Structure formats: C-alpha cells, structure tokens
Length: 192
Image 1: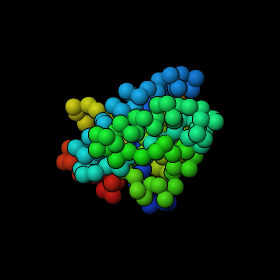
Image 2 (image 1 turned 45 degrees about the vertical axis):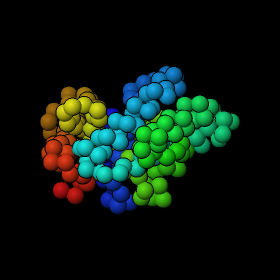
Image 3 (image 1 turned 120 degrees about the vertical axis):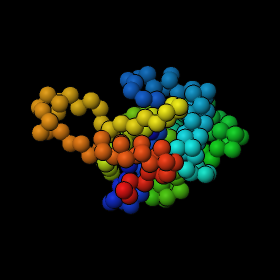
Image 4 (image 1 turned 135 degrees about the horizontal axis):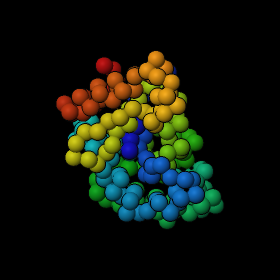
C-alpha cells in the first residue's frame, strides 16, 4: 500500500508506503519482520521503476520507535530488523536508507532526496501525507500484476449515508488519472 500526493504548500510530491497496513498498534511490532521488510523494499523499488518510470528510486525508511529507537534505548526493532533489512536491500542494488525518525523524515532536507518514504505503520506516515494533500492523493496497491488505484480515504460510510450531495470525488478523479499515467509508464506527478 502506497499513497501518493502533491503538497502545493511545500511544492513536494509525497509517496508514502507502509510496511504494515490496518493493524492495531499493539500488533505492529510482531508484524514487522526481516523477510517482510526486504520483500516490501523490493516491491517498492520495482514498482517505482516499472510503473512510475523512476530509473534509480531512492527509498527512505523510518524506524518503528520514537527517534528510531535511539540505538536500542527506546526499542530494538531498528537494530534487530529494520537496519538489517535495509542492508540486505542495498546488497540487491536498492537505494534504501535509514532508519530515520518518523517525526523528522517529512522535511525538505529528506523529501528532496527521496522517491518514497517507507513507514512502519498506517498512522506513522499517512497523517502527514493526508494533511498535505487530502482529497488530492491516491492509494496505490503495489506488487500486483495489474494497476490498482483508489481514493485516499476509507469507505466514508458516514458520508455515503448522507447522499451524493455530500461526497467529494476529487480523490477518485486523481486515482483514475494516476492509473492512466501509470499505464503509460509516466511519473504521475499530479501536474495534470
């Protein structure tokens, strides 16, 4: 799962992928595995090349814990799992860097040098993206043999029961535009 959007305020194109998706916070540490992270990094790398036309994707990876664990003081997932996964990805010629603290990764000094940010869980990366581009961003499913895009929000059942007059279709339009751009192997920079 990767969300992609453009922030006109910061003039930056954000791509945020997730190592885990919709899990309870208590279940996240056990869901982050060395094998899973390596596979996720391989998928992100391949998809950025094949479906976005980025020849040499740069992927920045967050830690799980505050301040990326502070060398084990706040947790060891960065030492035991995340750093080894990044190293293994690098051995496969994937430009992955990190782990970076999630609370500081979304600054231009990092974003200017990244094609995608891989965060460890849903609410670590998506609040920033949605703050910057909600309604103008797109959910992209990676690793499928087909292109699949969707809106940047959930089912919105609370709005659906109110009727079409309350619905906003801007993210749906972006999802369709992005799928078309991906089909033509262009970088969907949302400048359409």
